[in-house]
Image 1 (tube, rainbow, N blue to C red):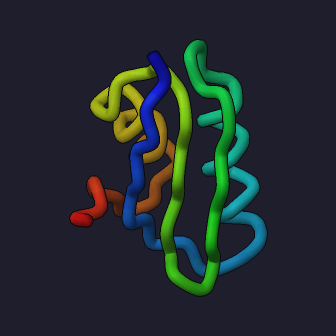
Image 2: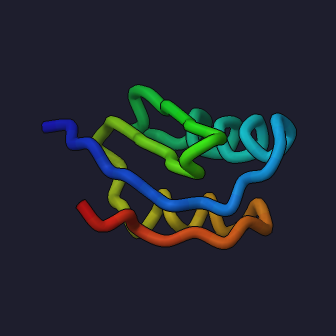
Image 3: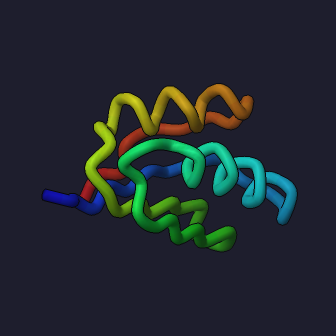
Length: 69
């Protein structure tokens, strides 16, 4: 069953958005990625675990954490 997971990520430009989108879209179990540059919010739908997704985001060099609802 897929779930929606949101992350607060320090993204400041289109290059940042592309880097984060690229690593997440390559992950097995990720169905969709929506990124708001203005809100610095990344929304991911899929079956990948939040911990695995966060690890991939952090590897881009961006500060990130799970978003509180």
